[in-house]
Image (cartoon, rainbow, N blue to C red; front, side):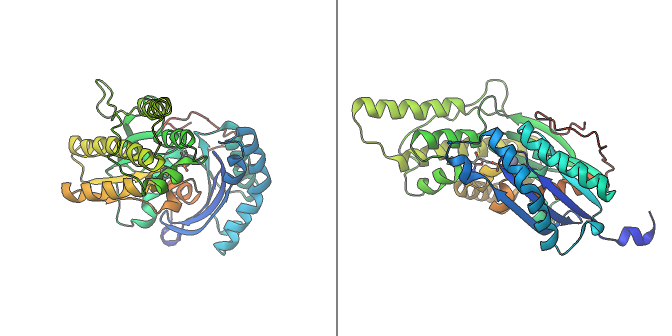
Length: 346
Ligand code: KG4
Ligand code: ZN
């Protein structure tokens, strides 16, 4: 690489379509977001009470070209200026992933650009680099999304060690299920977050599950059942249900479990940096609790803005940049891998 090449900015065009957001972004040098376009399908899936995979794929194919065009236009660049195409190739809904992967391959082929496949969770973790310019590995990251709850040691860019995971429901899934049970509808997380502000978090004692012999693992299905049992008990005994108290008490139970394990991981691995990522990381009570506890424990706390917590392509552009500079390249035979493991490179 010549000196002039090293001085040149590296621009990634990133595509994300693993679930219900069709997204494209342009990211400069792994840290500067030049554009971040998201076409959300939430309104459509709300009609069915959750994401319908078949509908998600169909919507992605309809929207993806327009979203990419907008991302390039907003960044004031053309495909010629782009150094590599980054795309989420797993994990996620296979039909949804395939739309982004096929699109990225077509662009990479037509524009003769390198193709870099990205793990969706690596994207979520990397969202922390956008607004925290000083953040560098190593650190601990708690990933809490609709599909995943992972406690990760980020040893270096692209180097992950998963030390804890959920044994059953993901944190976001628990939010969505409890929201449905108390009649809030889909997507549950933001609605529980809002209603909980009006409730008493100590009104009902819900369990904080631990997994025997696996101190960093999580389990949320017991908590979800406890909420359902509480609702049944109220109905049977004709006790008035206070949805706000249930939301606040449930939320506190989730946040306590997440915070407890995350701080324990920082101590065990002697790390004084803790980051959070994924849709649930935008939860206001979680952010406040983490902020306070980290301050007490002398741990630097990092979190992305809510728009970079939920699914977006900017985070994929950041992850793709660090994969690109470490030499990751994919061929035009790249396929969607719905259950891709973090750190696995296929
Ligand atoms: O990361 P994400 O956008 O998609 C996945 O990769 O799964 O996460 C979506 C999840 C949903 O379960 C949603 O209910 C939850 O994140 N979520 C929240 C909040 N905003 C989104 N959960 C709690 N509080 C929030 N404010
Ligand atoms: Zn996600």
